Length: 101
Image (tube, rainbow, N blue to C red):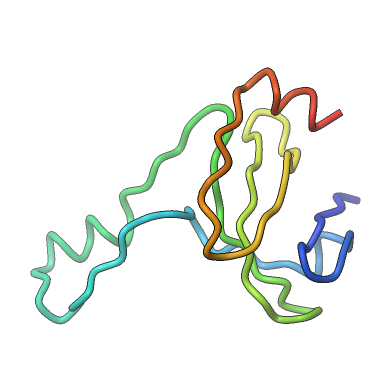
């Protein structure tokens, strides 16, 4: 079982959480002003790196709050979690590997 650390509640089982997609992306101020191509670009075109990615997560079956997480897509390990509104931590792949141990 994968454990995810909610920054508000602590470690919980993965079944309590829902992925909210890529974190720190610019959301359109006026979605109704976008044409179909722009809307599709916003909805579907995301980074899919091999390695660290910043994602939004929701503790759906807990506190219900959103938070951000750095996850390594190669190992599916959560390197760290942090509260919404905080900037993405500046962490190197070496630091991430050490933190995930």
